[in-house]
Image (cartoon, rainbow, N blue to C red; front, top):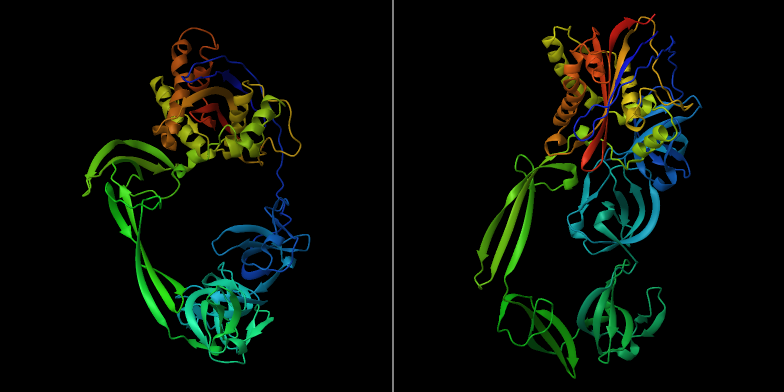
Length: 597
C-alpha cells in the first residue's frame, strides 16, 4: 500500500492563530497479520472459594508478569475465584476477588486451597469478651441462629478456633469454661481479653465470711495470702473480674488504701454499714475552669450526679457531684457553605469528584437567642455536577505519562507508539470533535459546491492519526520523530481485502483553551476545540484560498480540507490539563479509501 500526503502546519496560542505549512510524502508496505493464541489460554468461568495457604507467591497484574501484590499479605484469607486460566506453563491461575468485588490479581492455584465460603477452620485459643449487644451467634454457616450476644454480654469465652469468611469478617467458635459451645460469632462483637476478663470498676464494701480461701497476687495463681487473718473484716472491692472459670474475683483494699489481693467473691458477702449522702455542685465555664460567680454567664447544662465513695472512720460517704456548665454571653458569626447537585440533593462525597456549575449568592440570616445572643449565619449554596468521565480522563501536565512522552518526543526524538496514543489521545473525545468539525467542514463544502466528506470508518486510521496528534505537541513538524522503541508498535497492518483510508493530506495545530465551567462538559469542550480548529484551518484561510494566490502557508489547510475531492476525514486531539487551561494539539488528515491488496 502507498500513501501520499499534502500537508499543512500551524500553531494556535490562547486564541487560534495560524503559523506555517510544509509538505511531506510518506509511504508504507503491505504486511500480513498472524493471530496467535495467548500463552495463558482463554478465560474459564469458575466461582470457587479459595483460601491462600502459601506465602511468597506473586499476585500478577497481567500475563506479562507485571507484579501486583504478594500472597504473604493475604495469608489465610478467603477469596472468590471468579475465573481461571490454564497457562501453557502448566500452572492454573485464579482471578481473585473479595466480597466487595475488588480484584486482587492472578494467583497460581498452588498457593491456594479450595474451601467453602467461610474458609477452613483455623485453630486459635484466645480469650475474648463480648462487647456488643444484638449480634447473632450462628449454629452453622448456612446462618441458622443459635443464640444472641444480648444473653451473654460482658462474658468471657474461649475462641478455640476461627474462620476467615469470604464476606470479610472473622468468626470465632466460642466455648465457655465447661466446654459448652455457644456458636460462631463475628469478631466485631468481641474484644481480646485475658482469662480473667477486663477490669470492672466496682466500689462495694464486702465482709470476709470464710477462713479457707486463698488470696491471689495475680491470675497466674501466685499465692499472696489467705482469708484466715481477714475473717469478719470489712474491705473495699474497688473492682472485680468475671473470670472464664465462672468465678468473680474482687480486687480488695483496706481502709488505708493498702491492696490486699484478688479474692473469689464466694468468700464474701455484702457488708452492712452506715452510709452518709453528700451532694456537691461544681460550676465551670466552657473551658472547664471552675467559677464561683455566674453573673454575665448563661447556664448551658448540667451532668447527672457522679457518685464517689469514700470512708471516714466507721462511715461510708457517698458524694454525688453535679457539674453545671456556663458560658459567657456572646455574639457570633457563622459562615456556612452548602454543596448540592443539580437536583438539589446535598453532596456528601468528596467535592473533588464534582465540577462547579454555579456559586450561590450569600444569604444572611440572623437568629436572636432567648438570652440576648445573636447568631448571624452567612450561607452560600453552590451547585455542582458529577465530573464528566471524558474530562476526568484528561491527564494533568505533571502526570508521569505526560512527562514521559514529552521527554521521549521532545528530547529523545522518539515516536509515540500506538499504545501510548490510545492512552493519551482518547478516542471518545476524538469522535466528538470529529463529528462537530466534520459538520462544519461540510457546511463550508456545501457553500462552495464541493462533495460532502465523511468521518472515516477506518478505526485503524483513527489510531494512527492519534500518534501524530500527540507528537506535534512536543515536536511541531510534519516530519515525525526519527527514533522508535523496539518493544512498541508504530503502525497497524491491514489484511488483504480490508478497506483502508489513504492519507492524502495532513494538517496539524496547537492551541491553549482556557478552562471554564461550561467546557467541563465533554460535549462543550469538544465544541470549543472544533470551533477553534475551524477558525484556524478554515476561516482564517478562506479569503486566500479562494483568490488566485498559489498554494501557500496562508491557504494550505483550507485547500487540503475543503477544496480536495477526498471522501474521508480523520481527526485526533491531544489535551493536557495545565490547571487553568488545556494545552491542545490536533491532527487532521483527509483522503480516499482503497481496498488493501
